[in-house]
Each structure stands twice: as structure tokens, then as C-alpha cells.
Amino acid sequence: MTTQPDAPKTAVVTGAGVGLGRHIARALLADGYRVALAGRRPEPLREACADAADGMALAVPTDVADPDAVAALFDTVRTQWGRLDLLVNNAGTFGVPGAVDQVSVADWRQVVDVNLTGAFVCAQHAVRLMKEQDPRGGRIINNGSISAHTPRPGSVAYTATKHAITGLTKSISLDGREFDIACGQIDIGNAASEMTEVIAVGARQADGSIRAEPTFDPAHVAEAVRYMAGLPLDANVQFLTITATTMPYIGRG
Image 1 (cartoon, rainbow, N blue to C red):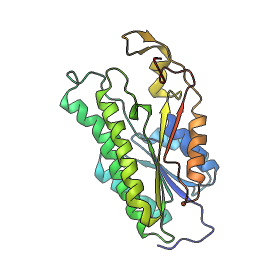
Image 2: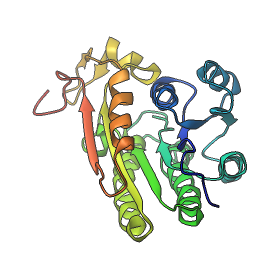
Image 3: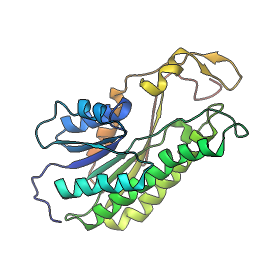
């Protein structure tokens, strides 16, 4: 698959119907990308790309926990646009909270299927497409969360998957080198979104107390992704951490 030199770059953003994914997808559209917005619910996806120019956005309902749905997503991108320059692996779920002795195996697997296996399968299809296209190569940005570094109480499934995303990021970076495929990770702490609404009211701390935590404008996350995505393929942001300045993360909180 050979692409015309003046063709717009293309991107897939998962979890794009709401929250951070929507902000990221709309920022990429504003930068002139053709963007495939993937998410479980069709209506938020359509709303997210309603203002896009003709041919620049695809709303593709996709459950990343379903490998067949992921395959269909990337087949659609290949058919419509013929190449992929950027994958933003953003889809994720916190799942049912609980300590290691409280979370059921079924609830554990549900979080793993979305956060880890979903990211892996998306990356698998993206890498295959990036290898075969001409010019070859592309970039993958994984949403790791600051839970890739430090857990919250009662977050065993979420934290384990986000630690695993770091391993996935490093492995893709290494395996992709000879094919001009770059991979980096953005770790986000308390960007204002549907997922952090509860945190802004009151979140359980390591000492057992409940305290409201500060959040920050998710537009800054989109700007960070734009920076990572805008680099030439011979440069890579391997890890980028962006948090609310005064959130209880560094030190004792």
C-alpha cells in the first residue's frame, strides 16, 4: 500500500467517545489527521466527530475486549485510508474496586480484557499495518496512567494492568525499531473526566481517609499527545507523566 506524499496522516483513537479519548481525537482532527474514533457506544462517537470535515473522521463502534471487533476496526481503516500513522491506545476501565482478596476472577478478567489484552490486540493490528504500508512505520501511544507507577488503595486489577502496559510499551518500542515504529506512553493523573468525577469529590487515601483531590483540564492531555504524535519517527517520547500539580502522588500526599 503506497500513500501519496500529500495525503493526511491517519490515526485510530480508542475510547474516543467520551473523556480523554474525545479530547485527543478532536485535537488530532484539528491538526489535520484523518481519525477513526473507536468506542463501545455509537452515539457519543458520532457526537465526537460531528464537526469533522467530510472524509476526515470515522465513527467505528468497537469493544476492544472483543478481538473480532478490533480486527474489523483496523480492516475499516485499511479499506478507507490505506495506512495508519498513529494509534492512541486510550480505552480503559477501572473495574470493580477491591483488594486482592476481594476482587472476583471474573471482575479481574474483565479489567485485563479491556486494559491490557485490548491494548495488545489493537497494537498487534496497528503494527501489522504499519509494517506493510509504504512508506512504512508509524507511532503508538499507550495510556498508562500514574497507576503504572503507584497504586491507589483497592485497585489491584487496574494497577496490575497499567503496570503491564509499561512492559507492553517497552516491548513494542524494541520490536518496532527496525520497522520505523515508535511507541511511547503517557501517564495521566487526575485529568478531569467522567472517570475522575468521584476523585474530585472524595477519594480513599493510603491512610484510609477520604479526601477530595485536584484535577486539571483534559485539554492539556490532548496537547501532550499532539506533541508526542508530532515528532518525526526518528525521535520518541518514551514516557511522559502529566498530573494535577498538587495531587497526592509524589511523597506522602
